[in-house]
Image (tube, rainbow, N blue to C red; front, top):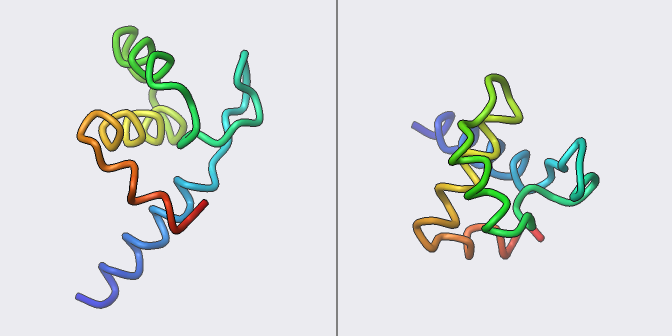
Amino acid sequence: MSGDLDSSHKELVDLAQARMPFGKYQGRRLIDLPENYLVWFANQGFSEGQLGRRLQAVYEIKLNGLESLFDPLR
């Protein structure tokens, strides 16, 4: 179980450090993207691959009011 917690923590840290690779918000941390931008992606359908999974995770975290998870990682 400890290994699961370690990998979950690492995934959260990686998510908090990930940056938008293109567009208007290029270089901005995914966790700091405006909610309306994430909603737009959700409506378009998240892309396949790591970026799409990360954007979807940030969207779900914000949607459920759990942004405070990122506070210690900022």
